[in-house]
Length: 171
Image 1 (cartoon, rainbow, N blue to C red):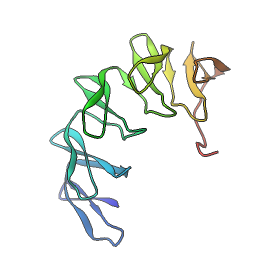
Image 2: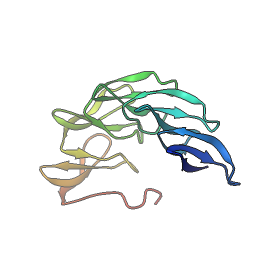
Image 3: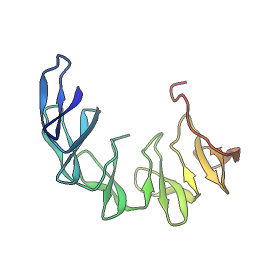
Image 4: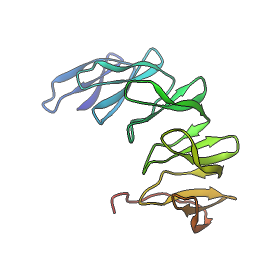
């Protein structure tokens, strides 16, 4: 599908250039795992490839689904919803990443840590910034420098770098 805008509204074309989903949305994103995020009247939800609401537009912002859960903003906090739109991890975080390798970075006042899919911290909040896990490691910022931890929270590469990011997630 390709997203297209007509008369101020977004919809989608199929691979032959025909309208697959009529332009009816204020904003849209790409499809991932069969769902696209769509915005209507200032709220975000998910639509399917037929343009039907799978999860009604009700959130201030949304993440795509990763490992069956999507981050969702509700009343200035973020939690995680399942594919029915129900919060399975209550909105209690200031910021989050997406689930990867069973964990997601999540921020509380004390900093970033990592939660499991039940919402429990398995690596306590202590970092200034934190990225998702890839291949067993996650980049974290501690005392102004970036390093890498393993899934137990052990520092594997000491924080010593000014910046860090993943270049190739597929090896």
